[in-house]
Image 1 (tube, rainbow over the protein chains, first blue to last red):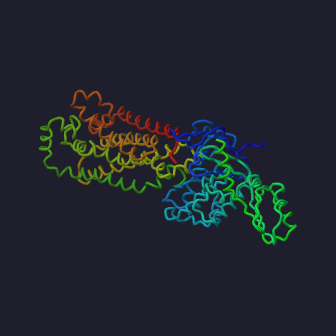
Image 2 (cartoon, rainbow over the protein chains, first blue to last red):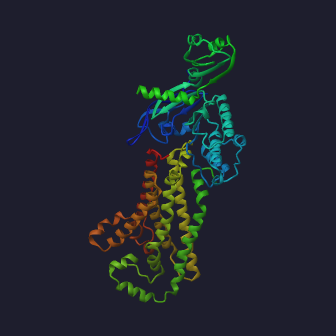
Length: 300
Length: 266
């Protein structure tokens, strides 16, 4: 198996008596986009700042590319691009000057890539950062993170302040990054914003990892609510016996049920009658996420 | 210019440095230019001699007479004003070095780059030192020009010794500001504590010359190593200079170590 890009073992951080994260075991492989999800205060930023060696663990360890971040921090960060949450930039510099500075400290520079990224995000690099809106500053931060063409991108709440069109462009860019075999680890507290871009999602809650799973697998477990409207009343019993079907209810010509997995059997059974309308509500990942939380809370 | 931490400091602070250098040159120039117009030097000396020693020692280090231009400068400029002019540069610059960025929240992105933390401290510390050299050169130039303008003979070698020691004194307190900023991440603390300590150190040295029980404590005060050797009449004492350099270097090194080890505020 290839070496994981990110691996934490029992990673724990307490701020005095306040919990940051507790016993976090996280593994992210090369060439994937992983969404790191959880409500505000769950410990997402703490995890990310530990990975970058900005803060130090109370217990446990974190590795990037198989090397301990405490011992090889500066060398490892050569391969990492980072966008902090609550981004603050040097207000008196222009976007270009900021890239000059960071490029100088990195010791490498790709002006062509910088210009291309700025163009795609519709960003004017000549303007002083002070004069930019919140969302535009976020774009400057994103260009700075992406311009180093890092093997690993760590983005803390990258969609903050971006309008939907720019978000789409960003995910396009991240998908291209993945296409080059590079890795993206991004945090968010708004799942629908990131779910279409992620291969896997990790859910964190109160400092603990509650789930880490492929989006596809997560969705496969999804329970859909299906509503069928017929020309005339149909026997409900025929539906109740179908695989994956639960909670069948009938109200006149309308029949509703919950379906886990494929809805194929339900559709075929319905086709024996005259169907007026079909409504199928796909639960948002958000709902699944909340359900998972509830399970974790119940188990605890 | 924007290629290194040092270069970024130059980019951010060259304007204040130029402005402060002009001020630091103009003040001493003004003082020395006034010297010939103080007709009553004799009377002033008598007045000083008549003062209780405790009061006098605040103005003059022992044994110097103000009849000479060097003596006059010692009292009017070197006793406290020149160190203050230099510390007004070193302490805020050092305090802002890491703590300023930490408070503004720009440190996360900087330290997520492939750069060791101690190099940030070193780059910013180096800029403080270079700025102090510029200020010192400005003060010397101001004194030389002022003296030449009014034809006052000045022993520039001894004056330079005083300026060098004043610069080193300011760097020692600047090193302390760097250390407190690196330890606490709080800029105001890193400004206030060194300034307060510099005032205390000033009094320990000046009053220690008169108060018996305080006398053994004088070497603790950086001011003792700065001025007690009377650089304006005796020139540069390498031992005193070394103590001040050591103070600045040790404080700076501790700042780098402290900064390496700390959790940075988000």
